[in-house]
Length: 484
Ligand code: FRU
Image (tube, rainbow, N blue to C red; front, top):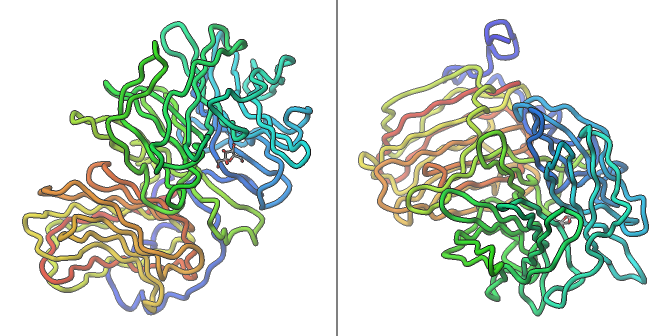
């Protein structure tokens, strides 16, 4: 649909004009997201079974289809060709057998000989104790799934692990299949490695990687994949600082079954990014994560839904062995109207860029700051409501080289200021921001850092304002209204 013919867009990004700002009323209708994946109703958490098959990206997810709270886990299912338009499909897995009586927990998918194989953790409670086993279900049409009569394929954890034994991730390397399962023992998160020649019989290899004692006591949702000339290990730790997802860059030795890390970092610096999973799509490594957290107070529960996925992100390894995370290029299809300004010069002041209504559109903002011409100790963009009582700020403090997301006064939901250290000594800094009705995602410094948060603004009528504190800011800015 062209921007002109769609009356919704015509007055969405106004030119800077205070009269428009004053006229705006603060009404919040809903937190339903406009261009992110969410369940049709009720609860979701982790993305599961991500796979590209027959022209579709299939996305499964942890789903409780009877309430907006976590409960016996099912695998919800949807598919998409572009990550913008989604087709919801019937629930793929539901608790039905002794071994998964209390839930079908997270896992992954592979395709072999035209058959889609889902690997998941069967969960049940016996005498008050959780029992977790690894299972498979298959499908030849990608819609109806049959659980393997030999389930569970892995019926107990090895001595290196513990009863926390879940989230199988399966992939092929040369002629063999490998599976890692998340676990933990003696206060250390662990990744347990298995191998198989037929996807049915699995042989335990050993501990592929474990926490150094500070990186979490249980590692959930492990993922190992090649990227450039390296391998990357991603884990979602319990028992580490606010369960922040971490990744390790290193080498995977398939002979010894050991992953050796060169360094590790946080994968995202915001509060609402957990249990990511990656897969190789049509031509690149794609990551999706649950855009919420176990700690979050999810305001949309009152409307009978909870949980969403992040935007799809492309992972790449740069020449210096650093991970770069970018929103998928295809998301540019969402762009409708643009407001932009080149060579903006601010000195200890602010400049307003119109008004946008997140009830009607999404918003993408791109800043290219020239750090040579910038002396401000703090600069960025603030999205304030028309009375300036609610603020979402994305900024950069030059003296410490830190990007921040301030949602202390962003309405209901999470509070706090979240920080990411960027590489120092840059001449330019790019910051790209995606706002939806109840989410914000920030990508900065050519994909070196991302920050993801759920926000529940009281008013969706936001006034984007560039700001510079204690000095000058030279930048360009582009604002796009986003819609399907
Ligand atoms: C991660 C997780 C997984 C588990 C699933 C249960 O968020 O705890 O380890 O399989 O959620 O829903």
